[in-house]
Amino acid sequence: MCNSCLVYSVNVVILCYTIEMSKLLIKYRFESLPYIVADGKGNFYQLPHTVNKYFKTFRKLKIVLNNKITEGYRINRQFISLSQLRKKAYIAHDVIDINESIEDMPF
Image (cartoon, rainbow, N blue to C red; front, side):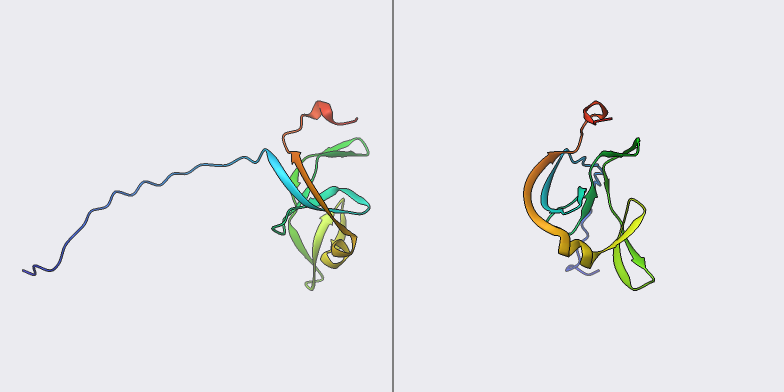
């Protein structure tokens, strides 16, 4: 029997929880795209708005590849590349409330 070997028992508790964001810190806005914003971490978001009587909700935009080469985003069914977004970007330090009610929307 080996005296130098010790066995420890450890109880592991895994906590699962979800965090709902209620406020978003906006670092960048874009010319001619008033409902697209970006935070400082490289994430792009679409703010709630209406387009031709259709209500668009708040969502995080997913990056897509056009022709398997150009990275960009689909905004209102149109592909906009990252280079176009960089040219249209301007700095804006805003904090917005994400949980806007539907009654606040102008339609």
